[in-house]
Structures are given as C-alpha cells and as structure tokens.
Amino acid sequence: MNWNSLNTLNKESFFEKWENIIKMFQISLENWFEVEYVLLKHLRLQPSELDRMEFYRAELLIENFKKYSEKEREAQKDQEKEYNQKFSDLKSGIKMPSIPTSGSFKMPKI
Image (cartoon, rainbow, N blue to C red; front, side, top):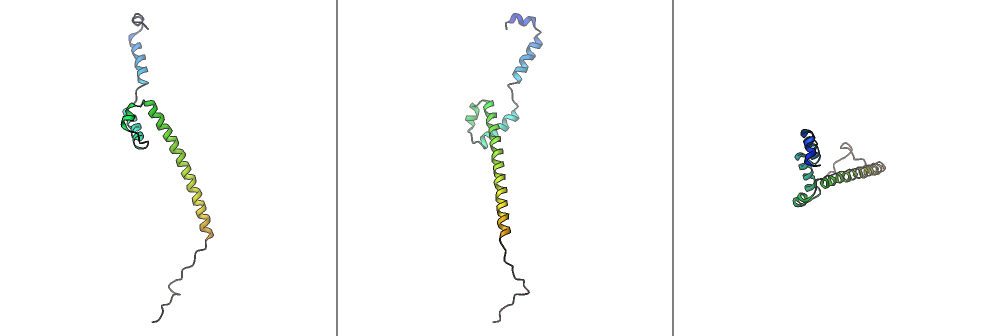
C-alpha cells in the first residue's frame, strides 16, 4: 500500500484496521502472570527461559500441561476406585474376632 492511496482512504478507518490487527497480538498482563506462574512452578522452567519464549509457545505448554494433569487425575481416580473395591472385598471376606465384654471378664485372684 502506498501513501498516495492512503490519502484516498478514510484515515480513521485505516488506523482502526491497524489497531484491530495489533490488538490480536496483545495479551493481558493478568493472563501472562497466570501462565508465568504455572510454567515457573509446575513445569520448573527458569525465568530466563520464559523471557526468551514466545507467548504462543507458553500457552501451548499450559494447554498440554492441563491435558496431562487431567489424564493423570483420571488415572489416579480410577486407581483409587479399584483399590477401594479390592479393599472392601477383602474386608468383607475377613471375619473379625469378637471382643469380650467387661461383664464376662473376671479378674484372677491372687
């Protein structure tokens, strides 16, 4: 686009279009700090690594981490259900001894 054609365009619409394009590449600081926290704490990245990383890569790492965490959580729940089922089956199969009451217990004489 040359500047002569800019004169024919409405300058406000031209700048509005560029502003909309620029907004597509902006992120909120709050979102970035959330991403930064997860990457630093849970994925144990160094701050220098994070500073050199493009934002889209950081977001993709977060998405992959969420998917992995969900799968891990589901596997843990399934394992816990299986354990509880085996434990309840084992518990129902064992006969617990009866404890004598204090009425039937007699002290020996010395």
